[in-house]
Amino acid sequence: MRYSILFTVLELASGIWAQNTTEKFCGYTAVNGLTSQRNNQKCGPLLDDAFIPYNAYFMGTITLALTGNADRCKQQLYPMENYTVGIGGMKVTGNSSFSRSSYDTNPFYFWFKYQENKNISAGFLSSTDYFVTESQWWTLQSAKRGDGFDISGNYTGKLAPYSNVYNNPADGCWKVNIYNHIVSPDLTSSTKNWWTISGRLTPTMVNITIQQTIQGPNDNRQATFDFVGTPFAGKPGKGALLVTSESTPTTDLALKGVATTGNANGTTSSGSSSTNNTGSSTKKSDGIILGPSHFQGFAICASILVLLASAFAL
Image 1 (tube, rainbow, N blue to C red):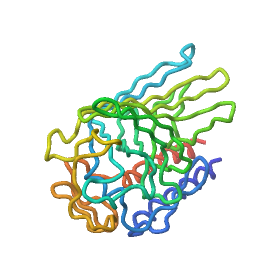
Image 2 (spheres, rainbow, N blue to C red; image 1 turned 90 degrees about the vertical axis):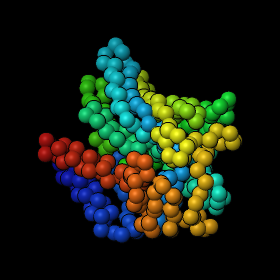
Image 3 (cartoon, rainbow, N blue to C red; image 1 turned 90 degrees about the horizontal axis):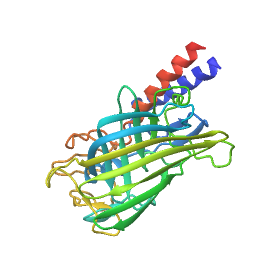
Image 4 (tube, one colour; image 1 turned 135 degrees about the vertical axis):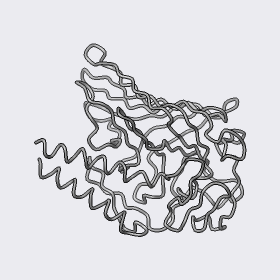
């Protein structure tokens, strides 16, 4: 057991080395720690990173509630303030070829930027072209109503290493999530688990709930992340704002300085951020610094530390 864990540690560590020494992450494969399956990473620039300035960002509080089995489990509530969520359209105004459609079939995009405090961590991502074996992990729907959209969906991914991650304090009912990422839905075993997303998007506020349900013999628990936030941009001119007047969610920031091929080469946005040909954000955009492809390393490091502790505790 100890050697198995140490092998996993070395494999993860080699992944970090590959990311740091391979200029375009070309040919690198990330390992899903629960299944040992691999998700190949893309060579070259990323559309996902080029989209960063055109997402609408909301800041608020995300709260993790651990509930269920009330007869024997402590009901827990853990808030994390100053949390950021990005909502994006599938295209950007001004260039119809600049599109996520090659790797994402959803009506909109979301990014719960990875953050942590002393109790919990959370980072959720609907899709990214950073991975090529499997690039979309959530299947989403949006229904227009009034001044916004009601959203819903399910986690349908299998190979989302370090893109959909979370952790929580351990007690008698909830264990620390040692691999730090969402497991694939399982609706066939005696103990079932699945993840859903639901909520409401408006230009002035978003309320999104991401929930895991675990059901089995004498077991019925939920881990619920609830986010409520207001626009990070605050006012026009300070970044993209959410637009709900069209058939699906989009933003109001028109594309500037982007080649008609729609790739990330040379992508720039006045006053926002620039993306170089490695797909990395090179300039702060009103406090949004790291793209979804960049928080992978933070989660990998966290997993390595936990695995090392487990190995030497045996």
